Length: 259
Ligand code: NAP
Image (spheres, rainbow, N blue to C red):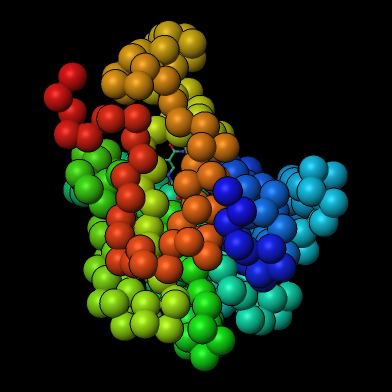
């Protein structure tokens, strides 16, 4: 299927690795003209090279922290009028409500709620003027069912979801959609990092915990970044103009946890 986005300008945030990279690669395969960001320049440039080799068009790479005002300014300077915006950033750390300070909450809200809102605010009205726009927020399965160890994430991501729910219904008549993908367990550095911590805490090997976590998923495996990217690319496609305000859970059947 031709997704109809060849030549569309796309910003994919936090895209040197993992889910963001999966989205960037899928959009680039469809001929979108990409601007990608991440904080670490080396991995970001390597990803831009990789996508360039794969598709013949190298993305513009902006090394910045998208959770800061300066970072977002740099990103928008490189691509002032995106047709597609995929919001993403690292997730807040795990922990317990008792130990979180107000500053911890402020950081989580800044990174996973206010940063996407700022980028949406800077781009959505111009998308409406042009009559095409696709905005996708990468949130988490925690929006559907809170994850006990990720209270900062639960709060900030539900805040973002609520903040754009009405807006998504106000933009769609101008062919601008706003949706979210809620990932369950996907095989990325972040997932491998949390597995490593669990293994250390339980004095077990990485492999044993990795396999145990896989078995908890009804699909008996983790999602791949290619699968994630393909879903994102469809939601950003010309065919998806009637899908807005949706929160698509992709979790291999994990919710509601009946197995
Ligand atoms: P990942 O593999 O660790 O990749 C994260 C990417 O984001 C890297 O490219 C990283 O590069 C970049 N990044 C992080 N913070 C950034 C910032 N402040 N500014 C710019 N770039 C930034 O993580 P992932 O698994 O793809 O996760 C992406 C998001 O989905 C996270 O919010 C995560 O919590 C959420 N999520 C993931 C899963 C999963 O199973 N993988 C499940 C639920 C939710 P730099 O570090 O160089 O900046």
